[in-house]
Image (tube, rainbow, N blue to C red; front, side, top):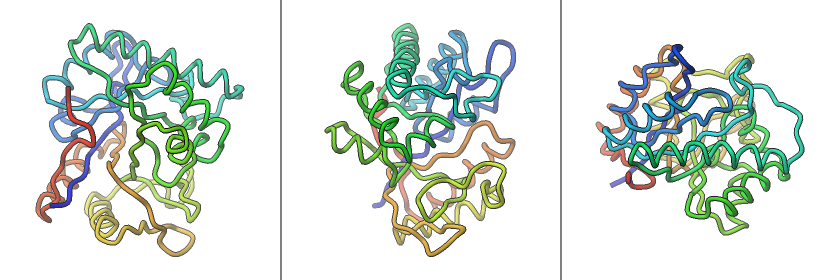
Amino acid sequence: MKQIDLNSDLGEGFGPWPMGDDATMLSVVTSANIACGGHASDPETMFNTLVAAKANGVTVGAHPGYNDREGFGRRVIPMEPEQIGRMVTAQIGALHAMARLAGTEVSYIKPHGALANLAARDDAVATAIVKAAQTAFPDLALLAISGTRVEVQAKAAGVRVFSEIFADRGYLSSGQLVPRGQPGAMIEDADEAADRLLEMLETGLMPVIDGDPIPLEAHSICVHGDSPHAVGMAQAIRSKLDAQGIKITGFLPAP
């Protein structure tokens, strides 16, 4: 039987301002990438999201990004790679500590937003993130955008790495995501997203907007938790995959 993980970026509220329907999403996904206080979140939001993830048997990952709440981590902030490594380490450490208080564990690391997209194509940034993970958190795996430099550098360094594809984002022939704001960047129709994923899981090829489909590896599928249609899309995708006999299960077991 084929199997795949379903993940979402959660815990992205701040103070009294929620972001997305985390409670419902945690009943659908098998892994949760929880913001660590950089692009979003705070101690209470982290703690509450961790407790909810534990209650739902969902595997937890740290979701570090640029310290840029105003831009939601979707702007590149000029930094040296070594600074990025320290920033990422500090954020993961914060979530790791809150997980202890919540009685659960962080199992993996997934970079967020502009940081993830930069690391996908920049070897120096990818190496800095991999080195931070390897040095400070050697027991944690990495969840990397499939076919990108983080995946390559993690494998070269001997770090456990799993590959993800996106349900609701368009792809370029380079393997990069279509930049937000450009035509084809977002896929909002749940049936379209689910059908594309089923075809990709069957053929190993991902459709792109600028050429022939490209080969990608997939251990996990991401549905962004901050979009208005996120829960409906995640539910539709899970239902269609289940109907095709594809088991939805974490790429790492829940603690």
